[in-house]
Length: 117
Length: 115
Image (cartoon, rainbow over all chains, first blue to last red; front, top):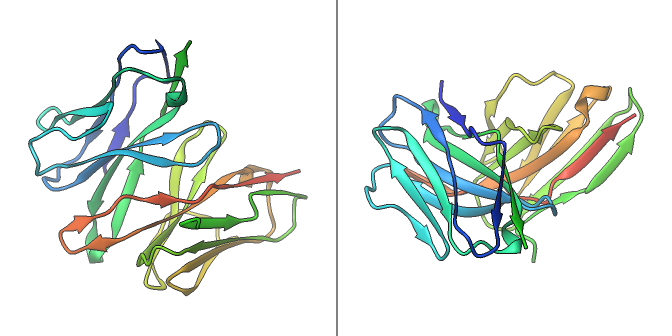
């Protein structure tokens, strides 16, 4: 069974600094997808960034980038120039196609990030 | 327009009652989900429907019954509510293609409190 591990329950970073959130996963599959979602205090889950496992190039979205190490099964999120609005829970998620065409998204336990003024 | 909308957003009820949460998506997605987020923020899949057909049914008590009248709607009915059912329930949708997959679009969540 696939598992997703986020080893940092809480982190803090000074405004304008850079922070990296770690995520590791366990799978025997070769083709899958990885995501980072953000859940601010408003509760709405928002996609931050997405990575296809078959792509070697790391995904980037403005201030957000990932370090995808497929062999190590690691998928860390780097937030550059942190802003107060980045304060949120961040969830790493793994998705693959299962049997009978089903798709299952498995989430990590989350990292609570606080950006300090 | 809200892409995935859930109602109600807050629900407080007594043990033993029956309640429903409704979800609608206007994204044209084929697949919809219900997730439960507990007090520790752990997100766990409950159900998934693809074109009105149940495709994922995790180990969830029979008191929980999803219903999908059409592919834009997925409702969750809970019978005989228990204290442990208190959580935030998220509806989500995604569009999936052969050999590819889209991200999940979430509703705002429905906070259920059972007293």
